[in-house]
Length: 266
Image (cartoon, rainbow, N blue to C red; front, side, top):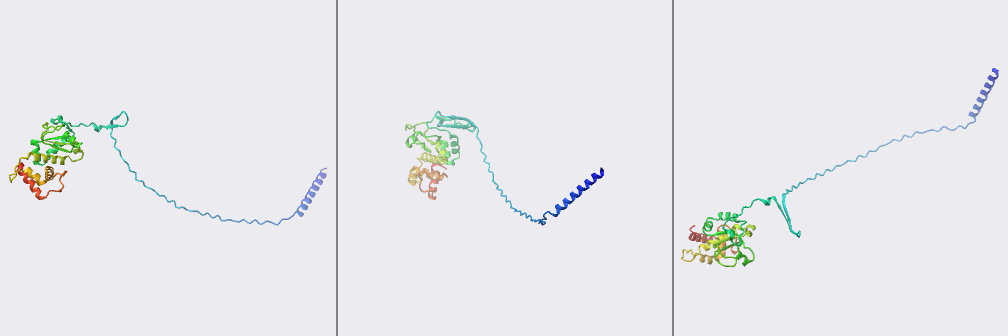
């Protein structure tokens, strides 16, 4: 029984071997394929771009605005007028208290400054004013009616009231208005009006030639206003409304020195 199985097994092996031999001998033989390996060199191109950095320096300007504290705002009913006042408006103001407060046209805002200007006048003018003349910070009302505005300065020898009547309390007075101070002309205007006062107060002065020296001066300088303007220049002022001849000549200087010496004793 065992031999039978062995014989069958051998037979199967022979048949299988024969089949495989036949299969190999009858298959199509293909030419071997040469596989070429192409090596591609990988070239890496690096493009370097120079990065240019532009640094802009901007100067920073700092503007400091100083704020003024607001203490009061007033608005009109129609909103067309607004008043804004700061704390600096509340500073104490020195108010003039004296005889001029009752004078028609008295302003007083610059009375103390005017008093200081009088004190700084040349000695000859200061002496005349201190002894005889009132110097008032105000708008002369009659002069206002004549020219339609407050003149910078007025010399009023007769004390003329707003109606043009003489003999008011301000006889022999000089008036310097706030307008003159606002224009920066107060000192020169004061010298001009003080020159009128000097001329008036020396109206009876007799010249070395035994004539009225004041009238002689009018003739020499072409009138009272030109005479006053010449005196302004003599006392180093610059406010001239009437003189057109320019600076004083040496002859004019000598004339005025003689006039002042004879008529004032200075």
